[in-house]
Amino acid sequence: MAKIDLMEIYQTLLNHFGHRNWWPGDTPIEICIGAILTQNTNWKNVERAIENLKQARFLSYKGLKEAPLDRLRECIRPSGYYNQKALKLKAFIAFLEKEYGGSLAKMFREETPVLREKLLSVKGIGPETADSILLYAGRHPVFVIDLYTHRIASRHGWLPEETRYEELQEFFQDNIPPDVDLYNDFHAQLVAAGANYCRKTPQCEECPLKRYLNC
DNA sequence: CACCAGGCAAGTA
DNA sequence: TACTTGCATGGT
Image (cartoon, rainbow, N blue to C red; front, side, top):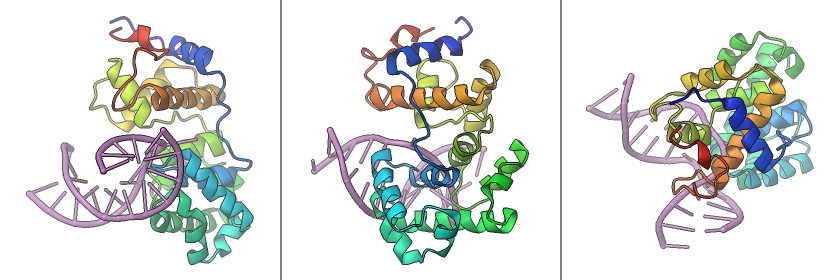
């Protein structure tokens, strides 16, 4: 197979879907919160939860830090897994307080690999959530991998199905320029393609990437 | 009614 | 290391 041209893939997706304007969210802390709430959850439900948090004035470091756990649970109920996610949000806030005095700006001044490892040590933050926080809230150049990215890459034969997160990430980072805005929109494009065409029961006939199959 | 959604952690072998 | 399971709401 010819070496896959990821920039051509990106252009094709961009032409089809248009700029995705990710991440929806007004502030870095809101993006961090959204990254945790959207785990295995439809974004539509996360929006309801975030709106509840906004109404309750919990959508900030201080607000979330002082939010009673039971009220926090109620706010985020629509996003599912609310008991676990309430604890995850508290764990992130505790981490932010302990390591950076509650300053996200200070947190994001860390070297990318160092911060990534520290985020991964927080209960409730795995690779995708850590990278979403790094890229979308902190503008660090890390490519976010998710279920759809993995599915699209393996079904197109770019990488074997059993390829793990970090290797998938290296594949993208090694084959496109390290540009934060490109990483941002490319991931969003892959999610759009995945959500619309590349599900468990794929709709390849409609997919804009159809012509790249078996490349 | 079943299936899915912008994952992660903990338990088992 | 490689599976498996619990977590939970809301849309299709």
